[in-house]
Image (cartoon, rainbow, N blue to C red):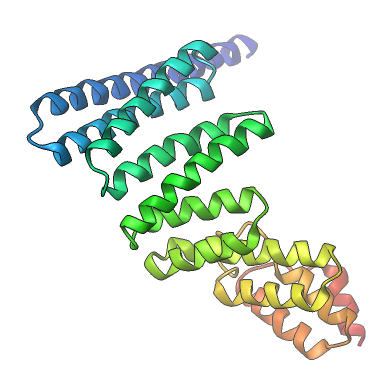
Length: 263
């Protein structure tokens, strides 16, 4: 039995190694293909798009390799430097391209996520924000740029700005709805901790209204707002939220339900 488990572990490890090799080879093919497109490009916009594609491939190869600890820090820096160089070329060749700014911003975003130092994270997130903002200025319909702006502001603790970003995203793409619901819920929690109880209730209710009754929401607004209404002896409002939660398949804390039923 132990030998069989050891064999399975070796097979799984081998599969993982093979999968990583294939993925990195795909990145190399994308790099080679983009290089050919750069050479064959007719005009600056076409050449800029090809530089963007190669920059994306270099950036993804760098991100993936570092995430799985497949390369040294020096090799990561080299690959990331090649990515930024290509993205800079794309922006210089087509300064009106929202995509060129967005993908350079995405490279900066990926680096920030992998950084361990808070100072380094802040630096790379700031660069990403500049490019994502430029992308939204050049294309007001670029919902992915609004999405990344929201993620950065949310991670950085600027929930007011994150809510603004996700609101703009939701107007363009339904993906923004769950982001926005989570952001309102997170701000509700922050306001609850700051003893701003009425403001917390408003945010939790907004989160529920937007769509926290779906499975995608990672922050639970139902239990906290039921508790807040119970504390204020507004039991009718508490039961309204309970019914919404149960109808959506959400679980309300048993002690809260007992407390409400006693009233």
